[in-house]
Image (cartoon, rainbow, N blue to C red; front, side, top):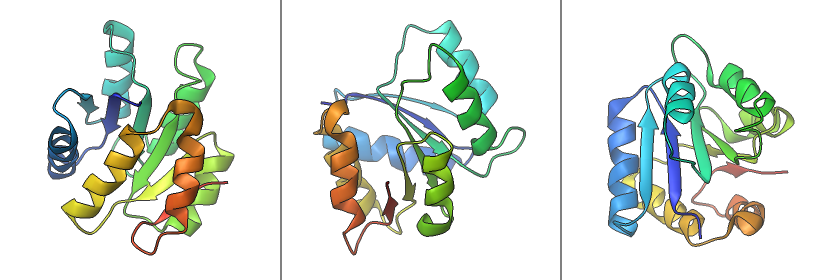
Length: 149
């Protein structure tokens, strides 16, 4: 099971919704968030917290999610952590770029809390080795905009 989540998003409302969804699913799930890529990298270096998955927003001030993904994939400590690019941008357009850049996939921010909770519940109940298969199943869903290769 995936129990350690990290979200990087500069929108406090989005981070609060994400945290609320995880807490509703299972209050024992571990969650950290950062509001910038710089904060993510310093938290990962200074903390014992080792996320099993990182959700990374694309559009952020300072370092973009794309630049951050590149940095994560070059670092020995973080290169094997699955990253899902997470944005309001179109899944098809950004999804191909995400996978090509080293992310496991792309998830378009859902329009409501219920869909976010459903998505995160599926992610939390899968194993890291089955994560890509789980995302592929969701890719076919009419409710979730997911891109995986």
